[in-house]
Structures are given as structure tokens and as C-alpha cells.
Image (cartoon, rainbow over all chains, first blue to last red; front, side):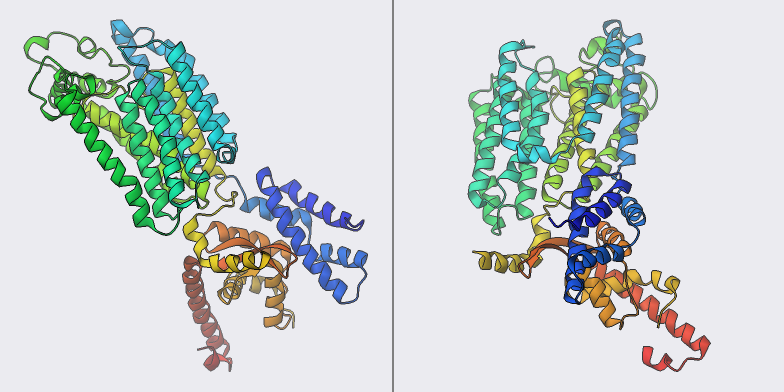
Length: 458
Length: 115
């Protein structure tokens, strides 16, 4: 370093003092010091000595405080206010629902106090993820994945079964989805092999879902990972032959799905998943057996009043709804709400969820860099997948599953993890303009240039 | 000839987009090129240029990438996007209309050349 570069350093320091968004400092210093260097060299060419050239070059830049203030105005961390407000509304609604309904129901007295205990933890998780530099997850995606896999495996040893299932897998699945986005990012530009390796990582997580067994986690994981992989292929992460890459993903998927479906419906029809699938296709065949829940949900849904409590006829006519729907605070919150308060409040809640989904996807589309796009897309998919499956199963369209309605249904883990996912999504949005690695589709224009350069370098 | 700064501030964005329309450039190069093309009338300060470039990048009018040129060190190059080109055409039409009207009012002789 030249002694005279002190002027330059002082100048850059003064500029950065004005820029509040610290993460951008490095980029600005690099660009401005390059500029000063060019200017200095020009002055040297004009015959000035180095010291004077340096001084003049810095002077040429203008007042550092003004430059800094201008740059500060341009580089405010971005805040997605609409997503944040929708989330706040949902959290308050969730609390309200637990408060309102736990007072009414004999089996849910503690629900609200439970909510009060985990809600602050969820908010802390959100804030931590919001300020967390998400690019770390990209650099250590395999590490994150294996830690998650280990925690899930340990979960089988320490947690207890609930109705013959391990429930913790659902929560780790929600985290596996963004971890999978990191894995895909790690295997970008690796061609077909990258796709195969990514699929193996998916298989590890899918195995955990099978082991639980958790049909809902498996569905959520599989659909999300398929979508992420498809989008990554279409965007050119794995090279140019997109059709062959897609075939590499979908041919085995379709084969496997049909084999599993046949296996379940024909050979293992006595098995729980098989039973549910059969029930799903012929809902009326056994109203008191496995099809009972879906029949009940449909009955409640179609009998619901616009506003007010549903009145059922027949043998369930005089039983209160929370007795009919034992999981009303968790798996069946939406249908419970519809039956208890009417379909207008129920649909209003669904409408808020839909607005959230739209806003999340808009923020995904604004992402310019490759990893940010994948992470925010995966977090968005995990939350959206949960909402879609929940609404479908609570309106009797698909068979009832064990699910979480993000921010609304009761449960500490579900709430905290969904808050963390949303925090992650907003953390990416916050850094939209910072992270460099651009989406491949945006790089292709000057690929030939950099190719030439790298050839020369070799 | 020195030009009143307020005349220039509105058109700086347009001038930058025009420069980038003719090829990818880095910041210092833009200042030099602008001086050259305007015969030293437009001297853009770095303090004005970079915030403007960064804003245009946020608005997706331009994109940046790093590239080593003259074998010295990587420089941040800017490239105009499709959106930027459209925006530039819009601004240019606006500018031509505006200047032709001003010239007509002033009764300037250059009116015929601007078309």
C-alpha cells in the first residue's frame, strides 16, 4: 500500500460512515476505490507525481458525506411491509382463535396460555432469521442438511409415537425444503450428475417421512422438491439440455409413484396409507371407517351457515362440534372455524392466506440472484404447500392429514418453524440487491465474453 | 461552455443509458466517454454517477457484472437491459419533443436538425 492511499482510505471511510446498510460497504469500497485508482493513473499519465495524483483523484470524487448520503438513500435494506403485516394479522388472528375457542370448549382451556408461551419464541425465531445472512445456508448447505437429518434421526429415539406416528418429521420436513434448495444450488452447473445427486438428498429426507410414517410430510416434501428442481432445471441451473434433465426427474418419479400407488391400493390395501387412498377415491363406501372423517368434514362444510354455528341432523345433531372434531385446534382448525362461526369468517381467513401466498410469490419473482431465488422460493413453497394441503383437507377435497395451518393452528413447533421460514423469506428480500451470483438466465448474454477471458487465463 | 447544472440533472439518466446503449462500460469509463462525446461540457462527478447507477440497477434498467479488463483488476461493468432500452427510447422521444418545442418558442435555427 502506498502511504498516499491514506487519502483514499479516509475518503472511503467517510463515505461508508453514511451508509447504514453494512452489508453493502464491501461492494461500494471496491467500486469506488477502483474508480479512484483509474483517475489516479490518468493523473500520473498527465505527469503528476503519485502523491498529488492520489490527492487530486480523491478530490475529484466530491464530498464523501454527500456521496455517502446519496448511496445510503439508494441502498436501504428492503422491507416487504405487506408480507410482514399479513403475518402480524395472522398471528393475532391465530391467538384470537385460540383465545376465543379455548374459552368455549371444555377440552381446550389451556390452548391460549400455550399459545402465549410459544408465540414470543416464534417471534424471536422470525427476527433471528430476518437478520441472519442467508448466504451462509448456501455455503454450508450439505452441513445444514446432514445436521437436520441427524436431528430427525435422533428424534425417532427421543420422541414418542403419537397414534403410531412420529410427528417431529413434519417439522423437519419444513426445514428440509429450504435445505434442499441449498443442495440444488451446490450442485448447479454439475449437469445430469447434479440432478442425480440432488435427488439422492431428497431421498434421504423422503426416507425420514416414510419412517415416521407421515403422509402429509411426504406429500409436502415431494411436491416442493419436485417444483424446486423443475424450476432450477428450467432456469438452466443444470445446463442447457432442459428436456433431458426434466425427463431424468420425471420419468423415475412417475414410475415410482405408479408403482407405489399400485402397491398401496392393490397389495397393501389393509395398510393405513392404502386405506386412506381407497377412502379418498370411494368416500361413501364405509362411512363409519376410514372414510368417516372426510364424510364428516364434507357434511360440516356443506351444512355451514354464512355466519353462525352449524346445526347438524341425525345422530351427531346434539353433540358439540369440538366433540365431533377432536383435532379442532390442530388438524381441523379451518373446518372447525367454518362450522363454529360460519363460512364467511372461514373463507375470510382463507382469503388472507391467499393474499399472503401472492405477496410471497411476488417477492420471489423480484429476486435477482440465483441462491436468493432458490431459498426464498423454497420457503414460499413450504408455507404455500402447507396452506394448500390444509385448506384442501379441511374442505373435504382430499383425505384428512396431520397438518399445520401456518400461524393459526395450535402447536409450538409448527408456529415457530413457520415464523422462521417467513423470516428467512424476508431476509432474502432484505438483501435483494446485495448478493451477487445472478440467475443463469441473466448470465448467458455475456457468457461468451467471460469464456474468452477464462480461456486466455488458462 | 459551462452549462447550468439544473439543466443537466434531469437528463443525466438519459445520457448514462445512451452511453450503455452503445456498449458495456464501467463507471470511470462512462465519465471519460461522456466528457469526450460532449467535448468536455458534461463533467459527471463520481458522487453523482454511482448512486444513479445503483438506482438504475435496482430498477432493472441496467445490470452489472465483474470482468477483468486490461489484465489489471476486476471492474464492475454495467450493461443496459431490455427494460432500460425501452425506458431510454421513451425518455429520448420525450426529450426530442420537449427540445423541439423549446426551440420553436425560442425561434432557434436548430429546430430542423433535431428532427
